[in-house]
Length: 94
Image (cartoon, rainbow, N blue to C red; front, top):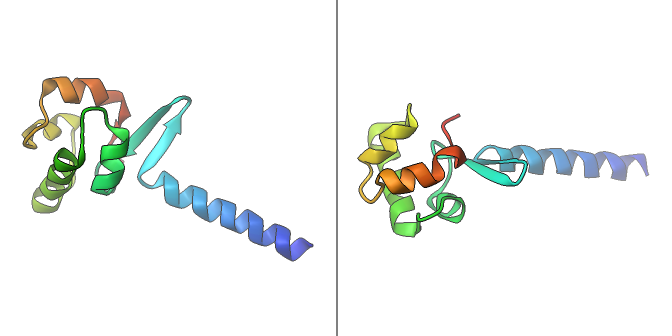
């Protein structure tokens, strides 16, 4: 019984740690770390960002390195002020 309980606890911790690497919940709002998330994860969480824009975010990150400021997302084609402002509180960089 102790062995099963230990495995369940370890699995729960591992799953929670894995999921928190790209996204975290803050009450009812989900945030996403655009410096490590996949395009699919970005598209799922950010409003107004589909796969094309999400892939552009990942491509920009791969070409130029991690985003240091949220405003740097404005350099990504398809991301303008309205999309950035609509998602500002959902975007994490660390």
